[in-house]
Image (cartoon, rainbow, N blue to C red; front, top):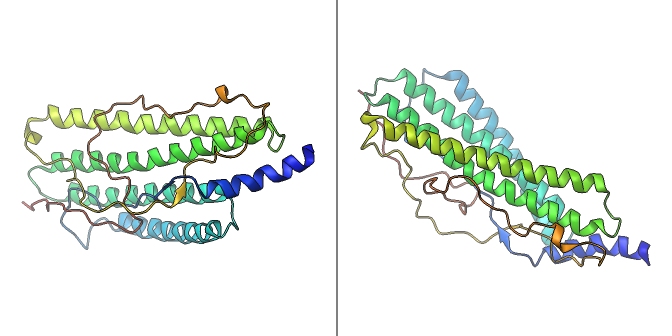
Amino acid sequence: MKTLLRILLPVVAVVAAATVALAAPVAPTTPYPQVPANANACLVEKLEVDKQQLLHDQAKRHYDRIKALFDRNAASASDLRAAERALHQAAIALNNARYAEAACRNRLGNDPKKECVALSLELNRLLDELALRRELERLAKAHYDAVLALAGSGAVSGEEVDRAKTAWEVAKLERQQVEQRVTDVKKQLADNPACKDYPSIRPTPTTTPVPSTTPTSTTTTPVPTTTSPSTVPTTTGTTGPTSTGPISTTAPVGTTAHPAPVVPVG
């Protein structure tokens, strides 16, 4: 009976995950504020953008393949979470490269509000990263919940449970770090008289949320009675600052356009 339970539980987890609420991957963004183009400057940074774009495109193709298999019950929820996690990490790297290239062009430009532009670029880079960090935390929590639910049957080891819990706690701390950096940069902008009226935060996008695509949890999996539900945190608390500015977490992959004023060239 125990052997049969060990075989059936992972299968049931895959089927049950298909009925769980899903969340769309967060798309990479376009740096805000927009900095005038300069074809002869920041060439190394431009090459880095090209490299990270290739890696992101590869991660997106892999995610799409796993999602198609998952929809046919040919891939597990764990496989899909891993693919989405890799896609979000690639999006963070691509965003960072784009913002670094824009910051380089700003440093070489002659905008009289160059310092405000630099702070605004960093603020929006962090806000864009925060949306992705929240998704990474959600995925880590869902994976921990799924692993913990299987622990009582012996389908996973205690070491695997410990790794999943640590990964979730690390993801939570990384999200909190970004929230604190957002608070710090906002204070720098507020303390700089030259930036008092500068539009430092990206306008809220007007795009319509897309249907969700990725399982957030597999906690509907039948759980053996030996597993204590009280050991699983039921919510992911947000302990960081709450005033992080407008963030879009529902944009479909590939959506990169946002209304953004062009920084004037002096």
